[in-house]
Image: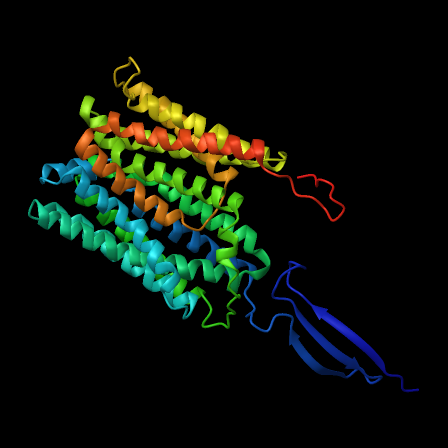
Length: 435
């Protein structure tokens, strides 16, 4: 007797939650013949990517973000010294520091969204090539020519970094839709480690081979990921653009604006520190470039490790802005000791600076975690070096710390007053809601 059955077969990858799952609907008749009626991808916009291939893509993207991050901070321990030896003022090289993040801020939104693969590859090529080109400035004529060439080359490097960042973050959404949080964390961590390790790498390579070696090495390393990514990344895929939110309405909300302001200020502090600390250290002691880079590394390491602690604390707090308050207080103490600021009866001391930089790294963690806002970070970081260069050039580091501390004191007062007098949200019955 012939009997037919309807059989639904589900074929999935090793991860049952994998976005690449494929459903096969089939009918099996009594003769043992299987007629496949339909093969359907659960997500029509996705290609089937093996776990191994995804891992390689993620690792290479992380490697690229590490290189892009180091391209910003690599020059911190030695470029000011080289620039001054060629007759460049702190004001001028402060703008060389600042232009990188400024152009990243300007170009990331306006770079056309073609394919993630295109921008990842072209971004790495431009960044790596101009990275190496920066090393040729060792033989540049001094004065304005050196400044102009530094400005132009670093600007092009920033455009490459912006292209890679645009393609990289888009690829996370397109290629890893079911693992977005994990991948965003991976690339952010890689970018952060690049910015942390950049000064140490630059300082050691500068001490070994002079001005050009850090750029030649890192420029070459940056381009290493291009060929494997070319073969690993899938071709063009459909992407969707999300609707724009009411930005003006959001920015008219005072708590949101306060958090944005906190985030901007702490990034200004970071940029100020990157552009001015080496000059200040050199003014009273004679450290090698690798030793100076190690001081930057200490700050970055304590920032990276403290954010985990701050994050765990923030998850258990009703009001994470208290972390911002603690962070700013620590940062005020840090800049007051780094100078030391006028009025403190202490002389500049290298161990005092090391302790202050560790404190600053911890403070930055509290500020960022307590008021995290990804937007405007680049433009904020571009303000710090430009402002720092001008201040160092005209009034010196110790006096330049006064407005830096003053800005933070004002924010501490605003945060305290806001949390004292703010109106708690209420429900429809007029009862206060728990935060």
